[in-house]
Structure formats: C-alpha cells, structure tokens
Amino acid sequence: MAALGSLPQGRVTPAAAIRAQELTKTFPHKLAVDHVTFSVSEGSVFGLLGRNGAGKSSTIKMLTTLSPISSGSAAVGGYDVASQPVEVRRSIGYLPQLPSADIDLTAYENLLISAKLYCIPRSERNDRIRDALSLMGLEKSRDLLARSYSGGMLRRLEIAQAMLHHPRVLFLDEPTVGLDPLARHSVWTRIGELRTQLGTTILLTTHYMDEATELCDHVAFLHDGKIAGIGTPSELCAALRPGATLDDVFIELTRTRT
Amino acid sequence: MTAVLNFMTQMFAIAEAEVRKLRHDPVDIFTRIVQPALWLLIFGQVFARLRGIPTGGVSYRDFLAPGILAQSVLFIAIFYGISTIWERDLGILAIYLVSPAPRSALVLGKSLAAGVRGLAQALMVYVLALLLGIHLVLGIVSLAGVVVMIVLSAAIFACFSMIIACLVKTRERFMGISQVLTMPLFFASSAIYPVELMPDWLRHLANLNPLTYQVDALRTLMLPGFRSTTGLLRDFLVQVGVFIVLVLLAGRFYQTILE
Image 1 (cartoon, rainbow over the protein chains, first blue to last red):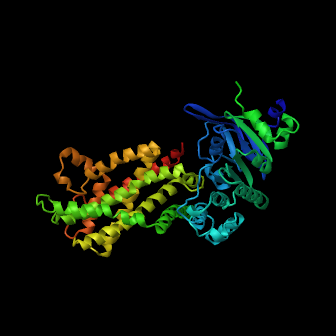
Image 2: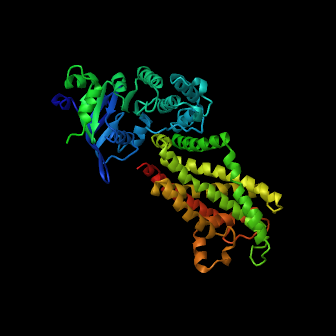
Image 3: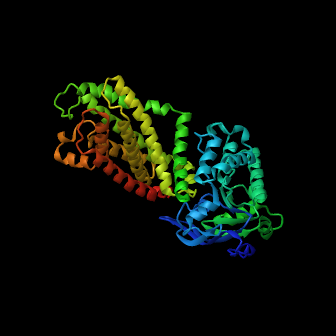
C-alpha cells in the first residue's frame, strides 16, 4: 500500500490543464474535501473515484467555479479559479451529475441557447450545433423535445451541450449513471472521440471501475475528502497485488478503516 | 462594445429559452387569464355597485382593470423564484452558471422573460376589458407606456422573487414565504382600492410598494380621464430605481443558491 501513497502527487507542471493545490471545502458540519492536491496534464483523461459523499462532486464544483474554495488553490486551463472565474468558465465545459438539458426544449434549442451563452459567433453557431449533434449521434432527433429522449440520448445531448464551445477542459460528473450497457458504451465511444478529435482534457467521476479502466489515463481515489491513492489504473492494480482489478483497489482504498 | 453585445446576446438567450418553451406549450398563458377574469367579472361587478369608492372620475370597473392587470403580472413574476429553485434542483441552473455569462445577464434574461409573460397577460386583460365594455385608451403612446411599465414591473417582482429564492433555497420554504409576501404586496397597494381610503399605517406601506406606482402608471395610461395620484414621471422613476437595485442584488445573490 505504501507504493500507492508515494506516487507523484501534486506535481505541478506547466502543461497541467488542471492543478489543485491543498484544495479544501468545508461545510458548516462537514469537511467535504480535505487538502487535495493533484494535477491533470493537457489532453489526458483523469478519473476521480470514490464512494458516495467522498468529495468528488464538491471537488468538481470548486474547479468549475460553482462553489467557493474554502482554502487552498486551483488552476484550470492556466487560470486561477478563485481570481479569474470568468476566464476559467470560458475554458471549461461541465456535465453535472443531475440532468441538465432542458426537457421542454428540443435538442437544437438546448444547444442554441448554450451557443449564445458562450457567444459563439452567429456565422459558426449552426455548424457547431450540427457537428456536436453528429458527434453525439443525435442529428435525426434534433427537433424533438428532449422530454421524449431516452436516458442515453439525454446524456449524449448534455455532453454535446458541454462541449459545444470546444472547451479545453471538460468536467463530466458521472457521465453514464443510470444508463444501460449499450448506452454506456456509446457514451464511452463519444468521449474517446472528443479526446482524439479535439484534444480535450477530461476530468470525470464514476462509480464504474470498468469505465475508469476503459477511459482514464490516471485516476485518484477520494476517501473522506482525502486522496487515498493516485496513479494510472495499471500502476494502482499492480501495487495492490498481481492480478488485482480496479474494483479490488477501490475496495481496499475506500473501505472505512476502524 | 463587444462586451455590451455579448451581454445582450447572453441576456436574450435566457429570455429566448423561456419564450421557446411557451411556444411549445402555451397552455400556461391561457390558464393564467382565469384569475384576472374572475376578479373583473365577479369582484368588479359586485363592487361596482358601491358608489362610495373615490375612483378618480372613472367607474369602479374601469378603475379595477389596470389594478387586476398589475396583480396578475405580480403573480406571474413571483413564480420566477420557485422556477429558479426548480432549475437548481435539476442541473439547468448549473449549466447557466458555469457559462461565462455575467450573473446579471442571466438575471436580466429571466426578468425579461417575466416581462414577456406579463405582456401576454396584458394582451388578454385588454381583450377581456374591451369585451366587458371598459373604456381604455388605445393610442400608441399609451400602449407603449403600458408595455414599458409591465416589463419593468414584471422584472422587479421576478428579481425580488429570485432574491428570496436564493435566501430560502428550498421549494417548501419558498412556497410558504411567497404566500406571505404576495398578498400583503397586493393589499398594501392601490390595485383594488385607492390609497386615500387606507388607514395611515397602510398608506405609508402602500407608498413604499412598487405595485402602487405600477398601478398608478397603468391607470393613468390606460384610462381616459384618470388623474394620476403619484405622478406618471415619478411612477416610472421609482420603478426604474427599484429595478436597478433589485437587478444588482439578484445578480449578486444568484450563484449562492447552489450552496
């Protein structure tokens, strides 16, 4: 286990798309994120893993400027989260854990509103929307109310919405929660394409270890708001014992020790 | 210059989302006419029989129509707080807030949407009033003034409601508190009776109530021969002032609803 803790934590490199330094979130009765330090290099996919309430969403909310940082610091896309929130917002896309598409609008309309919020020039709007819809495989249903979409389609629409402005960094909070296996694989494929086509840096959270193994270059396990282990999935598995899976690592690192 | 244009684009985007939703499902616009219709048809008919209400030289039914219009705009705008909580409970608000749009552009967009709904309401109240034989001024200047006053007042109460939502944060608490606030706002205004009839303490409250100025402006603009009690210019200045303060406050508070 010692090997897990001694892996390069918080190495600050100039190419880091995300850098969290002693990042902390305190609520009145809870320490949600406890001095977390990590960095994510440009163009890579980073997984934040851990049990419910481990502090994953709280970390993402701080990094996306939605929730104030209690102490420590963070930089996203080269901008300081606390002092340059608008620049950070311009550089990121965010897929909340909760459903975020407006189901009373069509897919096209959802994307149109996003395009305007990000001030994508009028001449580019329709091309961007068409590309995003086709990347997510939704061209045919673009004029249907999102209310009529299946869970998988809705999630893909939300990803399209999050990447429409070609953010350098994309935050995906449980991108495949509640989806059937086929829909999950379809979302995985799209996330992979995003990365290869646009070079987007992705930070995602998930409860599915197969998803983390499939998508992530590096993962960090959060437990009670602290980083319990960080590294590549294969490093972490090898460090536990030969033949271990990421599920084994999860259980080992996030079991509450008494 | 670009900053201003971007701000406008973002503000109108939020309003556009609401208008598009109404276009997909306009039922809400039509059900909203029921309440003002009841006020005008029942309350108005009965109270028109009382001759003791000093209505500034117009009949009580005429006097009532702009008041009921103002009231129905208030009831529509006050809904924006709960819809903010709603959008927070889904991820829609997070999507707005993670965008680079200034928080004030988001709040103004919502206010503008409230204004659009208010105008739809005004259109129906006008039709109803004309069917009832209520005398209304239909000149361009008068109508333009009504449009501005409705949008301004809808924005005021939408911002007010969003600020409350950001403070109380939950749907249940908001429901309770909005009941406690809307009725007093309505009664402590000149919507259904003139300020002169009120006891002193209530009159002082009414003079602090934006709804009073909205009603006075609407009556002055809509009713031929109605003499403004507070002065049309003052009505507009008060509303603009209140609007600016509330937009700034709402823009400040908007993001805190996530916490």
